[in-house]
Picture 1 (cartoon, rainbow, N blue to C red):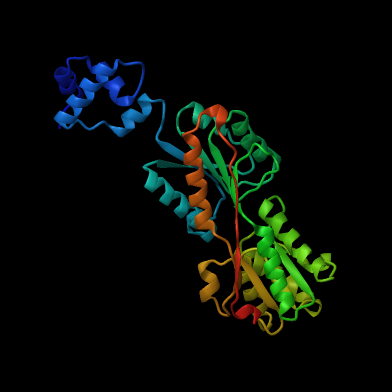
Picture 2: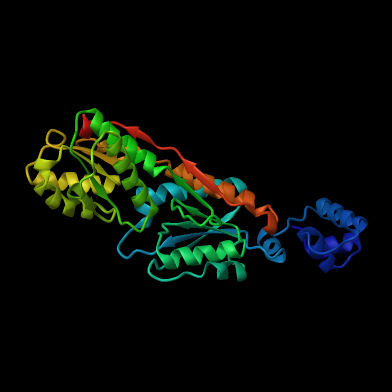
Length: 339
């Protein structure tokens, strides 16, 4: 394999000049640039991509920042694995590298330092919440006009880029479906309120009820933390209210599955005594018994689109870099739990 020294000798320039030409750094005469490129091509010289990135002040990496949650295997959860698969596909197609980083959800995270130390050229944030310290940390990237995008968390700050799903629409379709099969006392099992997903899904549930002339009942609304175990625990409270319920919307499939397991242990029959709709349309929805009606959320497409839009914005000048605002549609997949 040819070396930079050999290219320099053939072109009649210094090694430093070869480096500047091939890395696109600094002013170079066009005649010199041409000689160096011709010499490199003749010798078959291959530029080291990593070295080239550093020479241009770039890492060649997109940072993907995830929350560190003890005892939770993020990569095996449908939510994160689908989004990461989409991000990975977009990065592979563009030749970008990915740098996975963890943050403590309870503490501020210094995103800006990732750019200052050239660890990343752009940043995707997954699993963010509406907590003030997270919103402020992300807003700092917007203040610095850095290339970043938040995935599946919506912020009101117009400077913050995000790609998310229309969770309100999904919840409306789930609630209307239950009303359409004859349910009139529809409850709701939601996730933590500090996620925009939770707020949007609850708002969709309330809008659908009001459109049907029904007033949302606080006693028929329950809260979990998006885990299967929290759905299982919620079964006790739901069971106590079962004489007031004939349908229930769950804000994700994991909670729905846990809830059904808990109700089955109490001798309840699903869907005969309670029709249930989940959300995510994860793999478990199809093979669980009974199979789970669920709102399909395009997590893979969400991650892929966020990465693609972010890589497009990286090509723009800092001052003209636009804000990414993409909202993807959801759809309802009807199965046994609501028939």
